[in-house]
Structures are given as structure tokens and as C-alpha cells.
Image 1 (cartoon, each protein chain N blue to C red):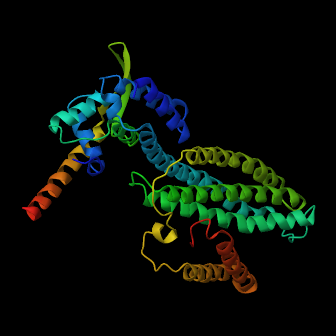
Image 2: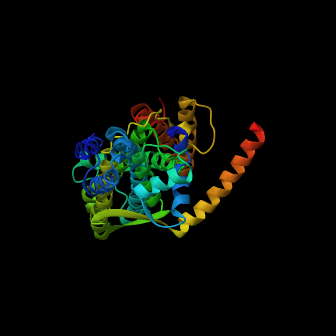
Image 3: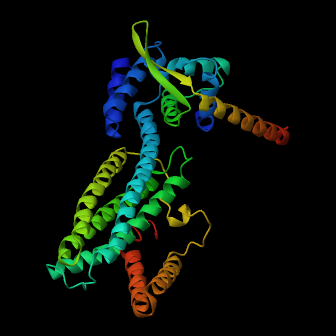
Length: 283
Length: 104
């Protein structure tokens, strides 16, 4: 094969696996220097498709791990802001009920969003972090496993943004019952902290654009946990319901505890059914 | 030695070759072949993903140079790369001794 033909095939193969821009240019320059170094080098370099795929498999692994870690960092900042907002809402408000919003339906939506979205963001974000750290020494992670990692990161980012939006909506809809500084802080701060989430979503998208074909199973949460548990997803769901229910019961006291415990346990089951397969909680 | 068997040791081999002096990709492959008397045989392009990975991990750094009118990328071992090389050399020696003790 001629050097020119080889380089054309390599460029096309790199593009096919999603490697473009500065990295593609660097790979092409180095490959060209190598295959022009002696007459037989082009035949010893390896098939363009195989070389491109090797790059893609390793690059996808590295970028996906980094994207998941970046997502968790952005979510941690958003999460701390949300938690502060949640706690301050008590001191900044006059104890108005959930139907006292400017538009009652939006007030209920905001309250529900504030209850549900952060929990989904937390679970998905922790699952992404678990996988990224458990696989940090793997040279190549199976493509299916990377897909699961990036799905967890995406779900976490989306629900993180929805959490901030719910807090801002709450602040706006209940502004008649809240201190002015709270409404301003929740909306401006929420908008500001959504930016890192959006930027991180771009790195997730960039990682997903590299087409790995590394063989292997996606695995699930039981492969990501640091301790070995029996591979029984519904038992894990039940255990989570019990733990979350008990925490809600303790936090809510005699008056609100039982109601909150039931709500949280039902939310765990609904979340497990709706998102369990997507997040790799069950196969 | 079959290419597949090499894959698991490629990082160590690259770090060992670069311990002596900075080299570009073609020279690394050539050095590997010469030092092993031709026993180490792999598709030469497979060295580059490994080089990029080792660089991202902070074990190597690289820069463009111009030699004989051609631009080439020169790779150098970092301090962290040297430490990792020493550690992997020890691990390899222990492994090789253990296998030798069993098979002979």
C-alpha cells in the first residue's frame, strides 16, 4: 500500500470512530512521520481501522471517566447550594403551605421537583462516581460499560439542573411568603450554578462521540460497589426502601415522619422501576 | 512474541526504552526490536495509543521537534514515569522469578 493511500485510510478511520480536531491532526502527523521513516514501515504500522479503533477504545475510556468525575464535581457544588437553599427556605419564609403560591399548580410542581429531583441526581451521580473510581486503573473499559457510565452522568446532570430550577421556581412562586434576599439568591445562584452543569454536559457529549467497540458486558451496580453483595436487585431496592424510610421517619418526627417515610419508600420503588435499568441498578 | 501477549507489558517496555533518552515513536519501536533481538514483534501503530495514554497519566511528556526537515514528536520520561518504571521493574522481576520457579 502506498503511504498516501494509507494516510487517507487512517484519516477516514479516525473520523469514523469520532476522533477529530487537534488530536486527529497530531495522530496523522506522527503516523506520517513514522510510515515515511523507511520503505516497509507502512506495511508494519497495522491496519488503519485497527489503529484507529485502538485509539478510540482507550480515548473513550479516559474521556468518559474524566467526564463522570467532572459531572460529580459540578453536581457537588450545585448540591451544596441546593441544600443551603432548602435549609434557608425555612428561616426565610413565613411557613406558607404548598398551595399558597402565586400559581398554585406551579407551587406544587416546584415543591415536588425539590423533593424528587435532587434524590435522583444524587443516586445517579454517586453511581457514576462509583464506576469511574472502581475502573480508574482499567486501560480499556467495555463500550457497554462506558455507555452506562455516561448515562448515569447525563441523568445526574439533568436532574441536578431540574433541582436548581425547582428551587428557583419555588422562590419565585412563593415570593410573597419569602424574604427578598432568598428569592434573589435562589434564582441568581441557581442560574449561576446551572452553568457548570451545562458545561460538564458538553464534556459528557464529547466523550460519548468517541466510538469504542471494546467488548464486554455493561455490568451493573453490583460490579461497582466496593463490597460484594448478592446479585439481587429487588432485595437491594427493598433494603434501600427500609433505610430511606427509617431516615425519613426519624427526621420527620411523630407528626410528619410516617407520611414522609411512606412517600420516600414509594419514591424509591418508582425510581427503581422507572430508572433502574437505565442506571444499571437492575438488568 | 505474539502481539497479544505484548499488550499487557507494553507500558513497561515503553518506559524502559525511554529511560535512556528522549525518542520519537519510530525510534521507540526500533529500539524495542533491537534490544529484544527481533523477538518483540507488534503492529507498530499500536505504540501510539500507549504513548498518548502514558502522557495523559503524567508518566511521559512530549514536544514537537524538527529533524531533517520533518516534524516529529519527541517523548521523555517524567520523574513520575521514572518512579513508576522502577516499581514496575521490581514487580516484573518478582513475577519472572515466580514463573521461572514453577516452569523449570
